[in-house]
Length: 98
Image 1 (cartoon, one colour):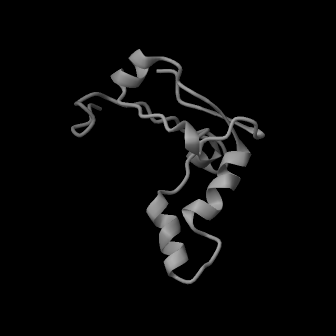
Image 2 (cartoon, rainbow, N blue to C red):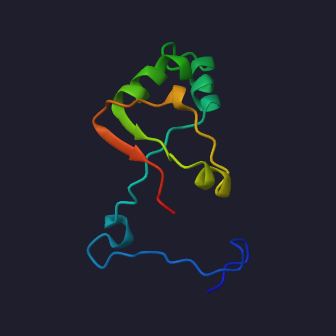
């Protein structure tokens, strides 16, 4: 079905046909919370849980591959911030090749 708020285009939604249904599928997403979330944790009395405290661990865990194409960055309004990514961690992270 065309989606009103997605440019009027239809979208595929993969579903699993197994015990657990669609939750058996791994979306293969790598995401961090926003900086403000971690600052809120700090403000709630959790020292050591600020963005600046956790960023070294985020970076240590990933091996990030940059987009590498200015045309793709411009087409999809991607702004890369290499200073917040790691390049030698155990989890390979890259943007979708659209």
